[in-house]
Image (cartoon, rainbow over all chains, first blue to last red; front, side, top):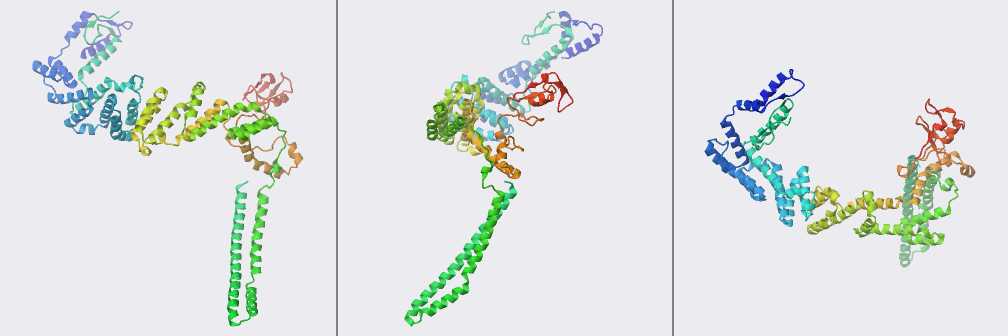
Length: 243
Length: 386
């Protein structure tokens, strides 16, 4: 990112000379400046390991550690437990997930009532999905209704969830997105973040943040210069400006 | 009547009541004493027959004893006091209340057909169909059959709702669905919600859920209400403490019934209250002011009849205000079709007759607005419609 900062500083100095047009930077000049930036291989490896660990790719992290010698920030064994929880939620086994979370750390759910409510909500959704109406009502009465009485926001979410019972054809239900697998993923991510927080680990990987910063920096630089762009992050290929 | 008069009359009445109770008590005591004396004398006479005592001497003794009681004097005294209090009350009543309210009567030439129509409609509105039918026959107004069938249906619907039966109401709603939809009526969904809540209160969650699946899925616009109604299932048997106590309350039947009554009359383009009832209520409320007016002005019958306009306004509640009427600030006349309100270019409003007088009947002569310094022409004024 310092490269962009250097460029911006230079352009500000050149503004007085050519105020009527943007500075033109050729591909050769751009690549020459890029090559001048020093990136340590260790930093790159640390970045990749951070991503693998945060997203829970245990096997990949282990192999990467062996091949590159980069040490993970936390014990890889804890990742296995976290991923088991996440997988349980994604598969709809919420009861199992809650047991696993409490095995990891009993305080996670106690100190996070919103997360606990969402897990219970997801469990209700799974019961409704399986057509177990009586069981769903019983569960909602015992576990969710008392929390709804204490918290208006929880009550509103509960109302949306219970309404699923009325629509046999889920496609006509206004809140049918609750039955999507994406809602499972959303709940799973929420659990994952809470576990990471409880382990004093950042809950988001650094790599996406860096990519966002890259896009932001390019947007800023567009106002002052014309230069080769990275449009496709997945390839990182430099593309010549359309002008 | 003013409050002071009412309080005074009540005090006088209480005093009479108290005197009457005392009079009753005194009278009872005197009579008891007399009876005891007589009874004692009879006993002694019977005993005396065996001992050879003369009955005459016993009777003489009784007479002496009764004379000592002076019962007549005591009764007269109490009666006099009560009578005095009562006559005082009568005087107060004569001062505070009008025994003859016909003093405020004003002869009006009624349109007999209109009166008959009002009475017939009133009977049908109140559900007195036999009386209404009889009146229709005698007055020869057979054209009122449509009104009859309308209010017959109305009473069937309302009576059924009191029994928690929504079938007649739903039939009416389906028959008028297009019009009700234009009015954004929510009656249809609300009635179904009432039935659903009845099932909930009976504690039958399976039946309630089945009812909801059958009926609620057709009302996507009411999804927020549906969410709350379904969530009520979680509080079956314990609604009083739930966030939805009000939703499930049986008092919702009364609310929805009132709402239906309003919408039914709106659809018929009829007022909610019977015109006869409104007229009587307004008259009842105005009567004290009119009686006081007649009394204060000491009007004779002829003067009262000749009066075209009351010298004081009558204050009625907002429920008796139906249409706006303009009163000219210059002439104090109420506007009418012949004398409509006219707006001057400056924005002030006066009656047409006042405008003509001010402009001296000339459309092109300027005159000054009575309220502000602006000058205007009669031809520049525009009639107002309420």
